[in-house]
Image 1 (tube, rainbow over the protein chains, first blue to last red):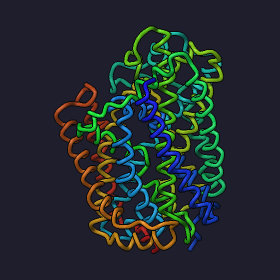
Image 2: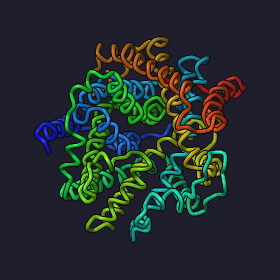
Image 3: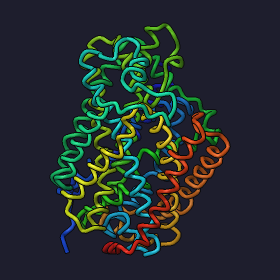
Image 4: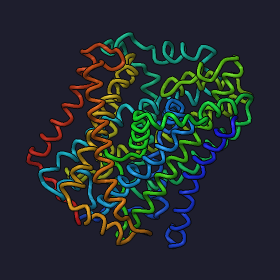
Length: 33
Length: 493
């Protein structure tokens, strides 16, 4: 697996799951989730 | 007036929305679309499309459903009596999707049981098309009903009936709380197993290796918007209906972001799973991944079973894969059916139990055509036309109506009043300009494409009856229901 492919995979996973995690954290902070 | 049902928890609503968005397309369509459109570079337009069209549209539907609190026809009638037909159009589109989508869930159920002893044999293509489906040579040549398929489809309808019969909180929410965590765990287990297989890294390289020159290709951007639009369950009343069950002080903006991020993250996870398996298969055959790659029905029921045959521990991998397909399909199916059930309850003032039972019985009878020997061929045509001229065109009309004919700032104020964070001018711009422009272009391009080149090489009579006639009649019937004299109560604002 090339480095560029690995970087794109990590970016894709980070943006989506990272984004979901940040949003869930915001919801938990509001004590609603 | 009877009190509207409500979600028990915020997590329950979010899981149900994610369950609706995550479907068979995440597993069998996204990996191939990404591979075909620039590999890793596809994530640039894909994530851009998610942020500029998918999430804004979803938040808008959450806001409109929550503000108007009704089924789709009730919501549109509440905004303007003359637009009730749009709700019925979306209901009829959802009904049509449900009766063929359930067929694929039925096939997955059959393959789950076959996975215990790899009952599909060594020639998986021959087994699927000739033995299992006994596929005829033409869509018009129905042959006979395949009773093993019909039984599996009836089983899928049975599960759907149980979930919907128990209502929003005890049925859909409870099922989502079981289906979704299990689905994630199953996909994680088989993905971890898949990436440790020989050749998996080469497979991942084929999917994720970026070709940035693809970003200059307009078609790649349209493919990204198409994937986002079809994947997020927006534009055919699901999110309108689901959000109508939210409590008054519920969040909408953050829930939209969570749902979209989880859906897209799940798609990428499925890409890793599928291309790891394809990489292993290619390595064993001593060929490139491009020689074994496929998508859709062919990927799930021909390529993957073939790959499973050569895996160590095929029973565990096979059963988990098809169970994941069943869960992904059922969670989407339930949401698609709920759209029509909510409208039946609103329009005819009947109980949920009665509406669900009638819907499932009608669904089994109408869906029988997809259990015949030409079922796959008809499904292919109906899916193509319903997606392009039902979901896509319906979504376009909806977004134009909501953003240009209604006061979008009212919806914005409603969303911002109770959401974790506010939506601002970017949201307005994306909804008023970007989303209609993209959906409009895709609708016109699809229309011209399908007129110029008959889809899939099918006979023109089959394309007429199962395609053009079907989508045309849906619009006409929607208008007839509106003027039929049966009054729909406008949604509550």
